[in-house]
Amino acid sequence: MSEQITVGAHPWVFASRQEKYDIFPIMEQVFSDIAYAGFEGIELMHIPLLRPEAAKLVRRLSERHGLPVIGSSFGGAMWDRSREMEVLGQAATVVEALEELGGRTLGVSTGAAPGKKTAEQLDQQAGVLRDIAAVCRASGVVMNLHNHTYEVEDGEYELSETLKRFPQAELGPDLDWLTRAGIDPIDFIRRRGERIVFLHLRDNKDGRWVESVGEGTMDFGAIRRALDEVGFAGQAVVELAWEADFEPTRPLRETLRMSREHIRATMGW
Image (cartoon, rainbow, N blue to C red; front, top):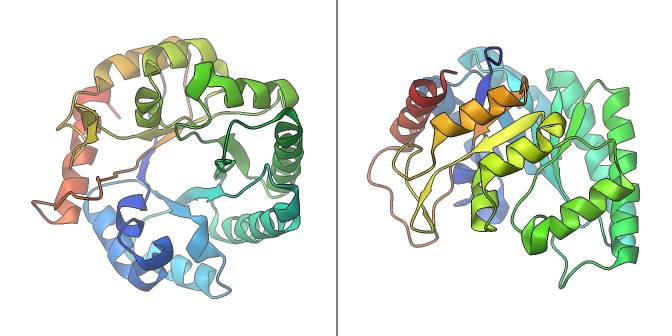
């Protein structure tokens, strides 16, 4: 059996309805709702952490609501050589903020390209990933590769090519995005489990996201058993997402609370 796992929340569902996905103006609500729901931590997004004043505000809210910062997600066009310095500069800023806040994980997304990434683009991407990982190590932060669909479509083409170029990389898969790419998350866990240090959890039904974890068809009990088989001992976050045409039926804090309770009931965390 795996050890007790810290379960946090990611604020994408808040950000998805904010201008430019920036949760900075509603940070008080984000922390209040996630703490109310019973989560043990928060995985932030890199956009607000790029502001010079962000760390001070986050620290104050973290202390006020008793909600530790687990880490942050981070994304950029890492395959695009013309944006290399921009991406590396932003990553360094975010890691510096995490070090100040006590966050210990950085889940990175490499950015979708206009088409299937070429060998040259994958080489460029792997070099940027190695540089970000080095910055993370120097600050005591663990970098993991977070997936959407583009990294794992076409037989996990991009992920496999990235791991060939950067074999030390650790993984932080989003199990719902795996299903959207036609990949069985339990099979993925069993094949790549020794690399998995972080998880994103969400639920869906008939190809659409549901309002709360537990209202879809994702078998979280089976996921827990597969994670136990591979000795998973990392951290997990619930990352709610809604379709563009979805209108919520209840306050978001209640949906977060229901999601947290479902993970506890089905996975024992």
